[in-house]
Image 1 (tube, rainbow, N blue to C red):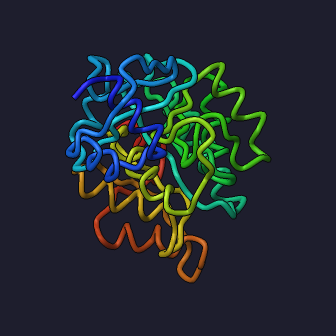
Image 2: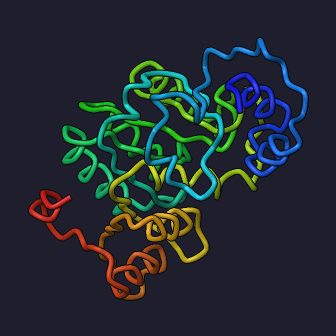
Length: 244
């Protein structure tokens, strides 16, 4: 396995891990001179150890911004795209409290993700993990945030270049969010959500999951309350944040 081989296959198969693995097994032809300045491969010494531990680690990562953030302690903050005022307030409070100690990791979606990234940039750093190529801005309403993170934080994806944001990419994106974080914090979610996919990935990796309580009957927070019932950590006040 060679670096140029991985770069060639990742480009040829749009970052699809299974297809890259099959290409390696077949020893398909590759461009021995292939170079991509935005890329980091699993052969590189600075490839994150947390991603190597995955059952299906990305063979290639595409990066825009401060690569050194991959070696810093990270906490994921995730939640609904349809963010309630309560979730927004709690997301801002949580991130503001943690940003001096941790790099905040999220998925650059609208709602909770975008709020977490913006708050992190006030006095800390953030990593945005994409379900598309790093040359794609998705959603478009976060174009200004995308540029800020590229300048002050890190944009990361396992998908090359102009790969579009396909639905099938986002569960794979969520596993990277979980893997790069020591703790996943959920501030709003329903049962059928990307946030819960991230939670399941985190639990499978042995990571801590923490959430906030909602009133009984609040549909916006039904999954958060269920997580607490099932043993997730609960954030009640600032002293709980000190334990993360």
